[in-house]
Length: 70
Image (cartoon, rainbow, N blue to C red; front, side, top):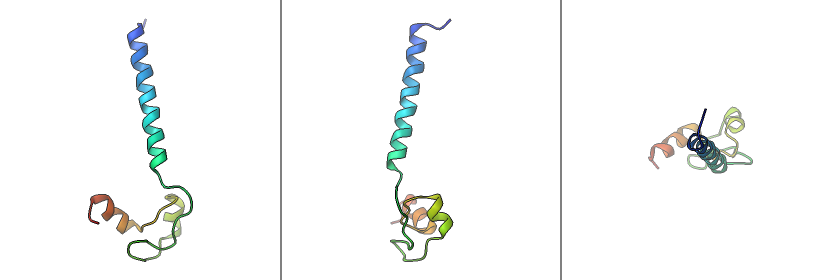
């Protein structure tokens, strides 16, 4: 049988996971993707635009941006 502390800890964990999921969802770009990369000007493939809604960079430029090589 679980005690009140175990239940409180489980509730806290669920709330933390929900908050992190909501924060991640809010930080994802939404809306239409650009057809051309805002950094290099190359066309962004249709599959990428559909998979990453709201993308503004091609894969190469996005990877460089995430690694900190602006």
